[in-house]
Image 1 (tube, rainbow, N blue to C red):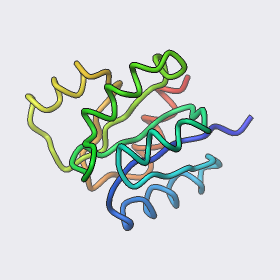
Image 2 (image 1 turned 30 degrees about the vertical axis):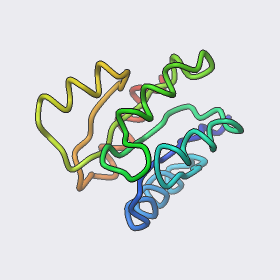
Image 3 (image 1 turned 90 degrees about the horizontal axis):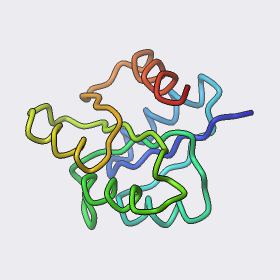
Length: 121
């Protein structure tokens, strides 16, 4: 069974880097440009793992994670935060919202895939 990863990031370059890193490892990648778009995509998708940025227009990563967690279908879906942010307060806030893990940009593709494998297991 192919695992699906939803990536949510307002940077087209970052979405493309994620797509290349994940598709190269055999994942099916669906993408969204921000939290609002991410929720729209989730209406029709059931990803194995979600990877989201924090700083995005319309709906940031914190609000997106909270919305995802409020949906019973996605209560247990692992959510990895991929961001340039590294301060402890934001990490704690992401955990409170329901994030599973935290990866700092620029990401190492092998470490990202490893993190996805760990949380999806």
